[in-house]
Structure formats: structure tokens, C-alpha cells
Image (cartoon, rainbow, N blue to C red; front, top):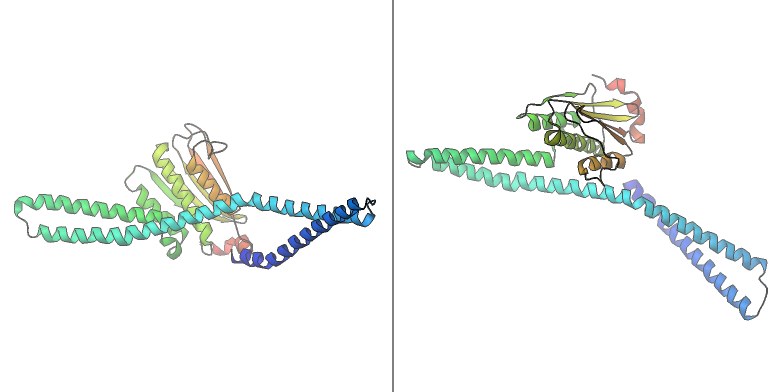
Length: 298
């Protein structure tokens, strides 16, 4: 992002100069036409060349503006995802710091009351304390889902494993996380995208698939970081355009992959489970390191 801003800063004076030159060419062309018309003179070759140059300059600017407009949806989507991540982090902090502290204080007060109330009220205090414990646990779980803090400290593999343990511990789903390589050196954007896509895939499986087995695989490849999430659930018919057909989760996954220059494919049929494959290409600075991934093998 900093490199793009630097390039933009360097480009602005040149763009302003070209716009000024184009305006001068157009003004000179208009004045020349007025003079020729006023004196009923034939158009000399120099004026014709001036018109051609002015038209070419205008065409160049129109083409550049069209390309700039064509890039705006992708930039808008990138900005939207960043705003969403910032908002998730803010909500996570508020849940963890503010609401979590209030619930902890209420739990301490319930403990104090339980030691002092008559015997006939002990059961009610125990119920209140149990409710506060469950609420505090749920708040911490939601906070962790909104903002997986362990991504920066523990890395992608540990974050995925912690999320799967927390999300699937009270279900009948048998799951496994396959990762036979170290995942150090992965950019933050790539780690967040892989985590969020896995998170959305697991959520969709729990809501709709009625699956019994889940396999998440992540590994380094020469082309990039490969992620695969497959289940043996009900399956469905993937939409050609998920956003237009109401599959917002799938649309979000596609968006995250495409913004990193990657790809995402969904293979599913009714009754035959679902498999989601995503590939995030390495940035140029880490491509050489990725091509020698055997060095990172455990």
C-alpha cells in the first residue's frame, strides 16, 4: 500500500501537467478555428496537426479515466473488507474488555452473595453463577471469532486448530487439520483470508450440510498457499454468481481470494458433500522462498 501511495504521489505532478497541456491544445485549436472562420481562410496543415494532437490527447485521458473507473470496484471491495476487519477487532475488544469485565464483576458479586444468603437461596445463587459462567464463555468465544488474536502470535495453523476445537467440540463432527509444513513467513493478509474462508466454510457446514466428517488441509505449494476444506454433508448446487443468488458466504470467500490475486473453486453435488479449494499466490518477494518449500518441511 505504501508503494502504491508513493507511486501516486510521484505521478500527480505529471498528470496535472498533461492535463494542462491538453487544455492548452484544445484552447489553441478553438482559437485557430475561430480565426480561420472569421477571415474565411483555408485550414493549413499546422492547424490540422494541432487538431489531431488535441484529439489524441483527449482520447488518451479518456482511456486512462476508463481504466481508473474499472479498477474502482476491486479497490472498493478491498477497502470494505479492511473496514469489516477493523470493525470486528473493535467489537472484539469491547466484548473482551468491557462486557467481559462487567460479567466477571457480576460473577464475583454472585460468589459473595452465595456465601451469605440463607440455605433456601443457595440453589438460586448457583443457577445465577452458572448462567454468568456460560455467558462469559460465550462472550469470549464470540470475541475470539471476531478477532483471532492468536494469528499474529501463534500463526495460522494454531489459530485454525484452536478455532476448530472451539467450534466443533460440542458437535458430532469428526474433524482433522492436515498441515505437514511450517507456515512461517505468511503475510498477514494471506493468513486472515485463509482463516476467514475456513471459518465461513465450517459455519456453512454446521448450518446446512449435516456432515459427520470434516477435513481441512493447508500446505505450501510452488504457486502459493493452498487451502482445502471438505466435508461429507448434504452438498448443494454451487451458484455461478453467488452474490446474485443470495449465497453471501460463498461470495465473500471468492472476494477474499480474488483480492489477493488468488482463486477459489467449489465442488459439490447434492448428497456427495462439498469441497472448497483456494489458492493464494505468493507475493513476489517470497516466491523464491516458496519454491524451495522443502526446506520448511518438518
